[in-house]
Image (cartoon, rainbow, N blue to C red; front, top):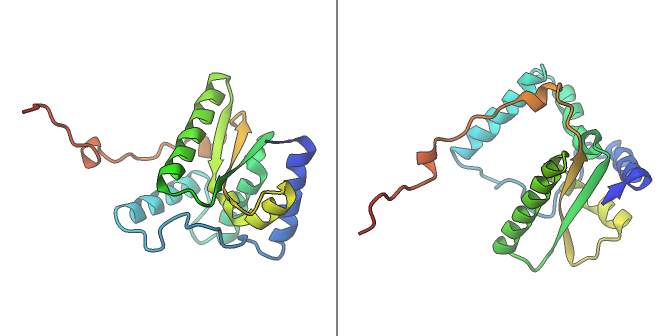
Length: 177
């Protein structure tokens, strides 16, 4: 957990490195599959367009998009930052365990009146994180998470993404033979 000066120092180190590598290093894992298939590719595109549209940032304005995206590396202003790692020997089952763990943290935070923002964007700064936090070599940086209070009037926090119809991912069996 990063608080106060420790949080500020990680943000400072990343900001300094961004002067040379604006998008970070290649992450140690694929955040998205290299050839993302439909319907996921379109959904990813649509949510991005909706988010930047809510912010009033045109598709052509790459600098404004990068400026907003780069707020990930400031935990979007949250006063607490988490960096989550996973042992390199773990596989899909354990990666899903990490996701469930993160969701539990998020639900507990809400119970205490806090908001969270999970951020895989931190994975591109694994070298800086590893150095600064002394992350052992057997651990892989998975993501970060900001914890604090949401800016309720910020346009991005009013965005409601579309959802796939239930029948697209659930099979309902009414009668059991």
